[in-house]
Image (cartoon, rainbow, N blue to C red):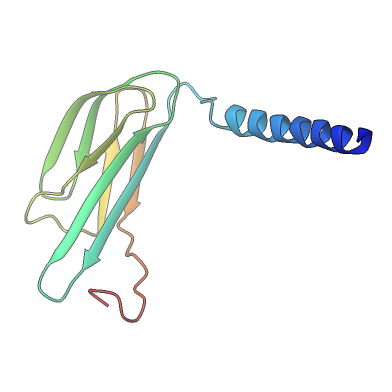
Length: 123
């Protein structure tokens, strides 16, 4: 009986440590940080594209400029933890996207293509 109680207590302690480590790893450490995910999925009749911006920093980002190539979009503010999904306008090159912000952020990302598996729609 004691062995079972000790094992349960040990398992609870290990679980608490793992959960604590996971929570600490999600706390932003940088003041300003932005993740840019640009994806294009080429189908036989059309191309589905999106750009997802995620503020991973501790502070808001302001006056974000999203340069799709021939056109530019401006977003006034993204708060910490906020995620915004954008659709590139018609006529965009879909080669890369450049995102800059007042806080010194300047990121250029190539569009990635999702992995196509046999038997999936669009493969």
